[in-house]
Image (cartoon, rainbow, N blue to C red; front, top):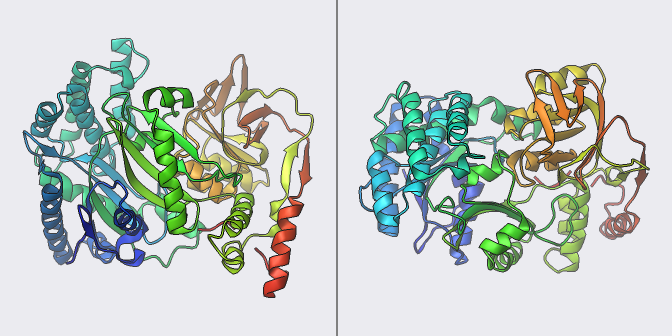
Length: 536
């Protein structure tokens, strides 16, 4: 079986159908000379055979992992699971078409106890080393062993309370070592292979990522997006870079333009002293622009240059995942950005004006948008909002409060519009997203995977409503002294990130100038009257 090497002067470009869109784009970025950690890829064609449990496929998997790890060791000068210069890797999914957050990832693979001591020796940072260990245990336990995330969350909450700190970000190295010990006890009860065998960790993680192709949320997403013809996922194994090494480090997501409105300005979310899953999972709210500028003053300029290069290389708006390690920027992924229908139209027009695409290409990209849907709905004399969060996907949503996907399905089946309220933006709620008129969360970021899906579906979405306490079990939410229950009416404004209790009056307007320009193109190309949804 052939593995594809990426980075460290390896620049083998293969189609997304063979190695997945994520890896194909990673290889293109490496060829452009962008700072990409080295990686190797197991192909899509192995996916079905691994899921079927074929012995020959398992042998191919093991051989490919052995060959790939040898490449990464040579490229990085580190050794997998070593006590002195340990190599840690991420194990990521990637289908031929982007499926944000629907497939699994395992981070910090190879983080044995020996590797923890090696990280301490190599970096002088025991907090970084023990944070990687506990993150590995959480990722491996939840994804590979299918343990309940609540068990790990309980360990974290208990220790945070005992240490009298605000969150796990404030735990010192000694506390993180104790946390790792508690979490190891949870994992050891279920682990079939020894946790201290780095190769066994890697094989189990790769198997789990391939198996995630058949998860309920992945099946639902492919059905909703008409992607049933896809053959499977590839598995990309990439050298870890560490955003959790202090305030000069962090993990983030950046869009080269606003994917909600189409405005020509980058949208950047970064969590300092964090790893990538902290951002894209929606479990953490990003740090402020002021904090980022103070700790990483060169980041905005450096990232802006890379975003412009990527837009020109791919001729479209890009959604980029990145990590900063001790002030050094690394690009982990780029893909065509999911966007709302109105953003799709504006972006297509702007890209034509900038000479990046032709008018015919622009019409092709918006060919499935119903131009009537480009009406913009605005609130009329709505007064002061009950609370304000972060606008993650634009538009107005009015509906009855639902606190689970099941409740959203029940209310929707009764003919009622629904606003789905969740503590965070989990992609496991994709079925509820599809039915909802809008989505609200207590925590999260504009760039979380679930926010991307909301934009792709054209759903208004407000995240990071910190004042809003959502209790999905009791099916209630509390906003200061005001509580409201399932079935009560509410309104959200997805651009400003505003939430109103009750039903607000709205007015519709049309982007006449943009529609007129599109109509002119259609007339010139003989496509007048064709429907023009956002790019997949």
